[in-house]
Image (cartoon, rainbow, N blue to C red; front, side, top):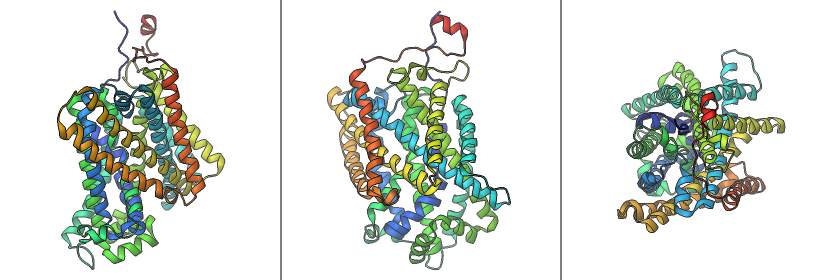
Length: 478
């Protein structure tokens, strides 16, 4: 007899993985939150084209990302890519940065969902309670789902995702078939002058932030049915679904109001633009449904990001960069249960600090943490593009020019431009304070440096089989 492998288990197909990563993008929340800001403060009625441009840049990134996937068989995503291309210290720096990035985005949505759920309950005549009470209740539910087998999370996310996408697609179809609002169907997204007008940097920043999560397909490698085929398919499919949905739905919102009217409405009432549009075109009942689905959309995003972050804890535990217990899997569920609990604990600490500090759940917790996550993700993707180029140049493992050179270079250039624009507009994203922007950016830098230091001071250690703590017989084998 031998010790159990300690690896994650599952038989997720491309569709199930797509559900989880698209749910992380919270498509309904993007249409309700990011789109009004992109229209009102960005490049106006041409904002839908920004989604297309960002999707193209991310597609270049995805080509190299998927080409390298068969050569990095661990579930650490950014960690394993950067380690294989640029060495273990930088790999661990990327891993720590990724963990901080996903923890930040999960904290952001935890703040938002607490406020949104309280508003929903009070709108139906229920009692008003502090936002953090709802947040802690949902945190407990996420902890239970994250502890169990990944298949359960995928089913929950699948149901919630279908519901939120369906209601917006109904709006898209009705607006398109009706020929739009008073100004007809918008053509601003086809006009280069319109696309380049206004604050393009802010438009790009909010558009690229809306794709957070699509790259997490590689994190579920160990739980995929056929990793070498499933992961690339899921990555391309997730990017295509999200990009098409964002572009189509934001165009429908613009067309419903008209090019000039939508900019004024988005600037004046960004928080209610989608609800007002749905209520006008589909009726009051549909407006109430969207309000409810906004909450479920946020919950789906939280659950998906929790699963991603837990698998970073798992990968780092397996490589002894974090306590080895994080690399254990549950005997029955095949889940990274210790890593999941660690991520829940981190979220609990972050939200508790925000509560004690008296931060506003939307204007501060959500805005600041989402800004940190956007910046962190762009840095990770830029470094990953470099890792892909270096890996194939050094090893010659794949000699396809487009997949290993051209597309990664185009992705690197495009992402670098997005990163520069995000840094320039970062103070705007987190509320206008340059000092706060520097402080939050410094947190990411310190975390990344800490990972590099761990890589330099701890010897390389391959993942070792760690038995589950839930089976006494396996403890003896260890």
